[in-house]
Image 1: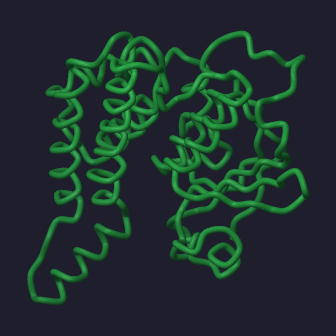
Image 2: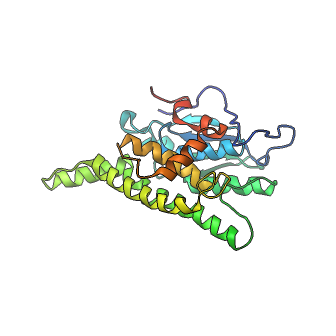
Image 3: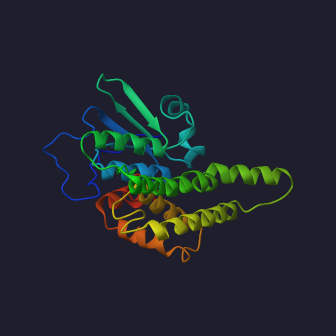
Length: 260
């Protein structure tokens, strides 16, 4: 089944100098736990956001393949995620009531909102003015291309369903090839945007939600043998992100459920 890993993790955040003497921006909520799978790109995005904002959480591994997928277990679908997906972020509110948020974008926005209320910096840009509005749109545009235009089409359940449907009609299909085609098309769209919006990172000189989506997606692209040479700007951004602590601790290989 799925269970909690030993201990808790206190990610370092994207920048040095997390102020441990002052209350966390999320002090109103306690007992954060992330239901995650080490190689899930959606889970990875949330691990990055938790790390960036310096939020301690318990890791609750959910194996997406073993025994047909532990995310399909009744205990999980009834208690945490009725869509049988990861990630799911759980915590107790100020009244002690258990809360659950699913979907990576919603979780990131939630963490941003609480951090900003305490003077923190949002991953979804919120700078005032016309340029700030454009920067926000660009960051969300890249994130949504990956979130809606790539990730669902590379999802294991999607590839399996397409293969089963085609084979039922007496034909054959390459599920990995289907995913590879759509990954390449989506990354090409992202490259065109980031080529004009990038500074040090994908959109300007600060980490944004765009970076949180790009890095896991490039990892997935390599798993599908996508030729990444056509995306030099995305690769440069990835290389820059790799040096940040939050990207180091959120990497799949650093997770307690990682399979070597």
